[in-house]
Image (cartoon, rainbow, N blue to C red; front, side, top):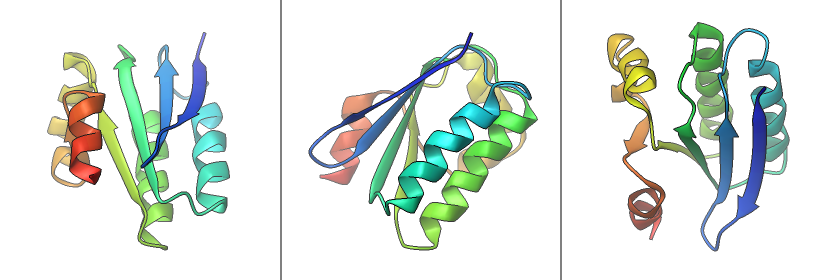
Length: 112
């Protein structure tokens, strides 16, 4: 079961995802990201520390979010990737496209 929650920080909106992000659950993540980009949220930090599996549809959802943010110079930053999820980003070379940090505090430091 996928859970997606958001919370505000002084510099960013943090989207926390719990569960597997796959073909069946990625539309829920997409809905949250689109809602935030429609509001022109300046900085979105995506917490993937409780995601142990992500397939190509989950990755595509995050890429779409990154593209939408780029249209108005917003930032979408990932943090807390588990080894299996990090490997997906490395194999697809998307670790060169996304800003990825080990934890929330280092991601927030980058925005300061």
